Length: 242
Image 1 (spheres, rainbow, N blue to C red):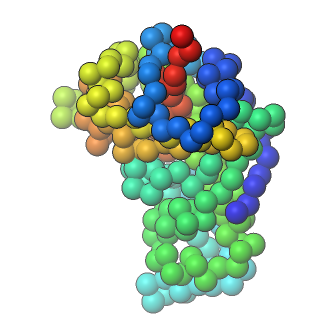
Image 2 (image 1 turned 180 degrees about the horizontal axis):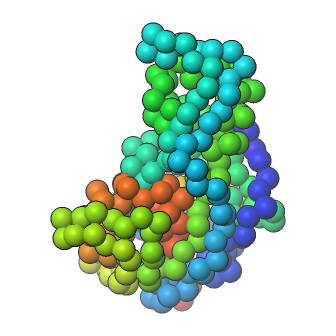
Image 3 (image 1 turned 90 degrees about the horizontal axis):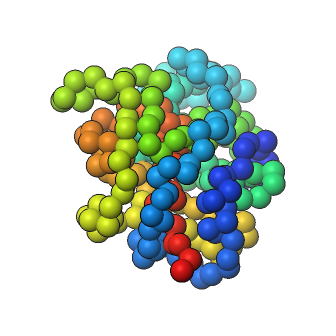
């Protein structure tokens, strides 16, 4: 796996403090909640990737795609639906300085295929150098915008059965919500650096419940927006020391 250091903003101090103590592998679905978590997430943006309509990558030699040769990948922007289907191919380590990222090729290859509308076997014929180059070109789109956990304005309004929604307003998570959905996060505390994994199908269900919107509508968000929301609600699923 390729490890790349990124100059991104570190995770919120209150989140970092909650994760400092060493422990065995912990899944968030057994952690108590932080009562005041919802209002403490920062609004600072961790990344600000450019948002062209198409992300292009020129190949060293053509590959075969559905019977035709192509020497350029034209990739659409990744969405929340891609995260829900494939997971996040970028593992983000915000609790070190500078923050680091790691690429997961097993997730990246099907995502590249989906974004470029090219069969996965064709992507697998690329050299490792080209694959890593594509990973690096896409990475910023899979890093979080650290968002306010109370209100969020997406780049494009959500289309829902209730009409167009320009702003998501999140209520606090309750124990009943927690029991109904479970935790969307798994925290690995006994590795260095600490690793956090989000289940984006559950993230969408949590956000949908708190914002009173269909979870399916969140698939139209930009990938970085849904990732940001996942980090914004993370404090709800961290243990509070008594």
